[in-house]
Image (cartoon, rainbow, N blue to C red):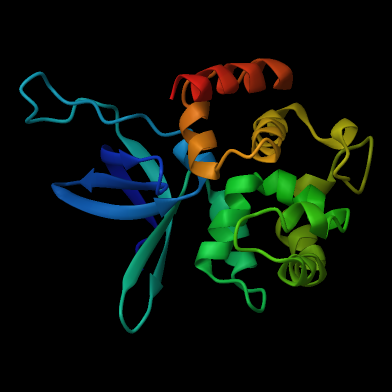
Length: 217
């Protein structure tokens, strides 16, 4: 199994949410979440176009082997990979649906939604219907609590909710993505726009900057 890839981004496709990462001269085609895509640098080549100059990145991976294909799914952090593997353990949730959910939510954001029983928000992920979202909540509520106890350790509230007041500042990206999704933008469009904004600002500022980027395209 391929657990991680460490190399330079050779090609990035924001529409398909895929990258080719070159490791020791070998290019690996990886499908990534929109959240991960927004954190990856664009390819940077030398002036003559023969050598990659961008900094190397590490991507955590899950390799799915089928009779007709071998696919790599990539994540910016271990938490996102672990959450992906929990999602595909749910009956009826395949890798594509799991990637869709994790393009809409960060791991912490998804934990909040599951803990609050917010299947409606989860069902907004493309390819995930109401019944599937309900199964995710039902089957993962206890599993997430055991796998990610840090998500439930806030002194102010033992059980996180999906309300804005309970979502920590680290989830500003999720809030902004949700707002843009509600405006009708696709996850690939949102991921591409997020590459041009300052994620250290307030949610409203992130949304405005992303909208400005989207309006230019």
